[in-house]
Image (cartoon, rainbow, N blue to C red; front, side, top):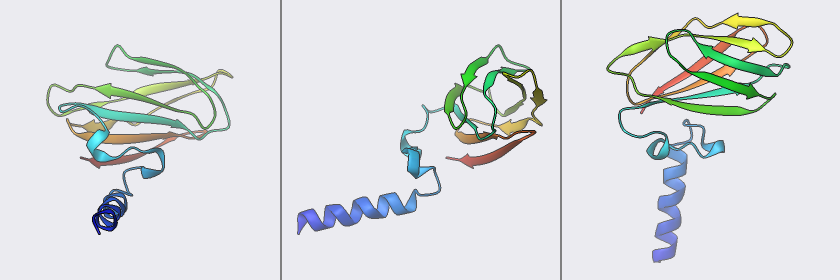
Length: 123
């Protein structure tokens, strides 16, 4: 009986957290330390990304292969925003539109061939 109850609780936990990228085990209780913003950059383009340079912060992410994910944590002072430029290995580059952030946000930035797409969740 205890084993059955434990299985039901585990399945319920997984179902209620499915919208937090459960397929890669990014469950909300384990995303980022309190007071931080987690940003996952996922390269869905058909080009290798050589670097991502943040415009207003001293942050650079290097070498994201096709279908690869890289994660960073930002500690905003309060609410704010960020923007960045993506540099592809072939010399192309695109600028992001930027995004609003505050502590507790979990953001997925999908890198596409000519633009980016954001999925944003407040945890």
